[in-house]
Image 1 (spheres, rainbow, N blue to C red):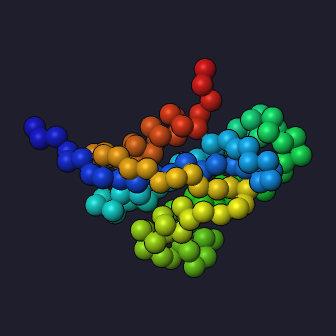
Image 2 (image 1 turned 90 degrees about the vertical axis):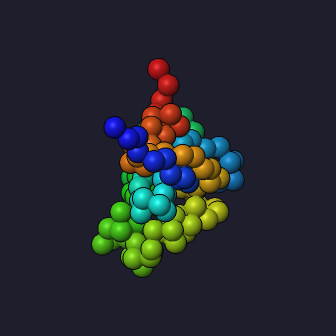
Length: 132
């Protein structure tokens, strides 16, 4: 039995920054791109209690829509507009470009994986889900 080849992948954490001027943030998703496997995926999870702790006046519906928009671009959903029609690498670069909005990408990191989809699940669990 041969083991699957490990390929290089890139990932970034999606952060929610409800009050940009304060700079406080919470992790709410991950983007994973693996060129060799032709894979671009995302996982998002908005923890409403954390959001309220950072900013009780934050609009959770608007924040959830912004997170879903990133997921839609990854999945090339019809509602993603022109960005959703770009090739995978271009979509990942567009999603990870610095911006000053409520949902912001963190820095891009790299790793090795045999299964980018499972890696997206692992990163969500490691970097986004509440501890405990």
